[in-house]
Image 1: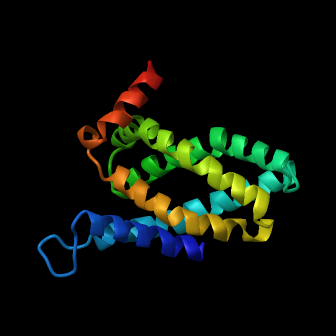
Image 2: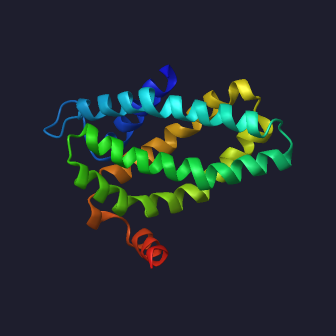
Length: 176
């Protein structure tokens, strides 16, 4: 929980830096946004990912390539979509958006984000499940998630019309 309570607000801070925020300009850092990321990362992401790893190790013990592939596949089709939907929905509520606005954000941003996620996370998960000992899996994923959370923060703060066109087109084809 401590690592995610640090990694998530740091990711928000990094993403805001890419937005052009600074300490001494008119466009100052949004410290409340960083706080929301810290709260969400430590109190929601850390426990859910720890629980997922615990369940995965009980259901599929071992670190063979076959077991790692099974865990990776199951994570990609279960935990990953759950985590992404929870992120957009939960962070919207923390921003004091309405339930309907939170649902709309999930509907708008889930598919573009998931498409990127499935191109990155299966490789990371396979390495994690095959090469990393169970006691070190959450810290390993914590380090990897720093960059991923920067991307999530980027996607979170895009307006729907600003989502890159190629991501929108691909997600629109999936919704048909």
